[in-house]
Amino acid sequence: MQVMSNQPIKFYTWNTPNGRKISVALEEMGLPYVVEPVNIMRGEQHHPDFLAISPNNKIPAIVDPDGPEGQPISVFESGAILLYLGEKTGKFLPAGLRARIPVLEWLMWQMGGFGPMPGQVHHFAALTAEEDRRYGFKRFSDETRRLYGVLDRRLDGRAFVAGELSVADFAILGWAWRHERHKVDLADYPNVKRWYDAMFGRPGVQRGFAAKLD
Image (cartoon, helix red, strand yellow):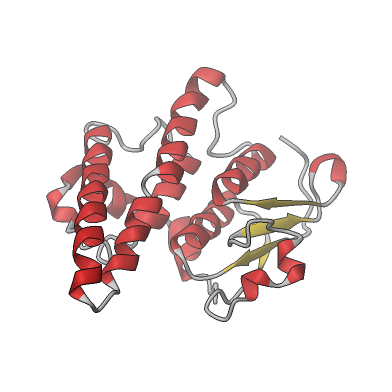
């Protein structure tokens, strides 16, 4: 864990699930930050200045003026940002390898599945031509529901996905927040609903979702 200053982190984002992961983490960790909106509807993610920070042209990204050794650092990809912030603050990321492993597992689970798959549901649900919509929507809806089931089983008897509250919970919450858009009723996944309601009962999470990102 590094010594932190009061210099705010520049947070480049838009109002998306991946952006909300980071706003929640910043609030829960008590880090000062300023939002630098990147309007992805207008293609601002392709501007050269943003490309220098995020080579994949995707939000979110951060610039921390007080990075390692006190030097500025930029970080892109929401999972990498969460790990960086956890390392920086020593919060929501266990120090011991054994305790850290489930956090990494469930963070990677979110990054590899519970994000890309619901994202495809968003895409196909928005199509108006039924012949374009039918196959993709069913395929990705089925996989999204399977992933909700995986999460529900994991949360059976657990308050959080990886032991103590961690960056993995923040990552997953960013996408579970859009469950209605996924055409998922959380009543079908009672353990997920319990966890979801408990997470949204936290003041830091509430502040993270109230933050204006666009």
